[in-house]
Length: 135
Image 1 (cartoon, rainbow, N blue to C red):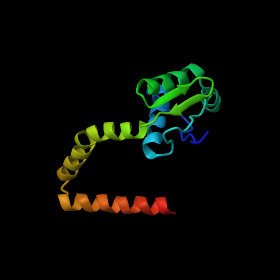
Image 2: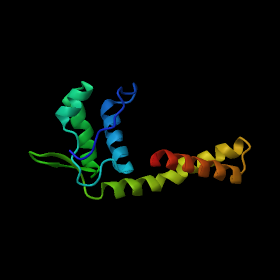
Image 3: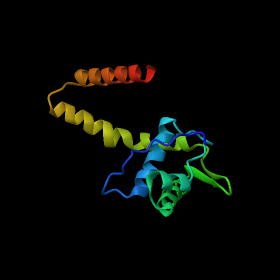
């Protein structure tokens, strides 16, 4: 197995576990922890690790297969599909500006920040994040 699972030790109530598993795998693909061609943790390993029904894990995998992000190789396991990262980036960029960036900027402006100050906060955050990644 090439990628390591980075799931939280507990699941959030109110959100189906299979959705949380699928979201975690999408996030790992997007962030590069899982790359095209990497094998996913098996259904059996997931279910044993988190003490959940294997059908729950299977449902998460089925969603990812339907989205074209994961492919099943009969008798071998589940693998990240070619182009999965690019697909997630494209989908994310489509909604990021309207759903995330604009509301964040509007909230900052409503709090009395000017555009220059908001940009300074973004640059400071980016520098801090890069420093953490480099250590």
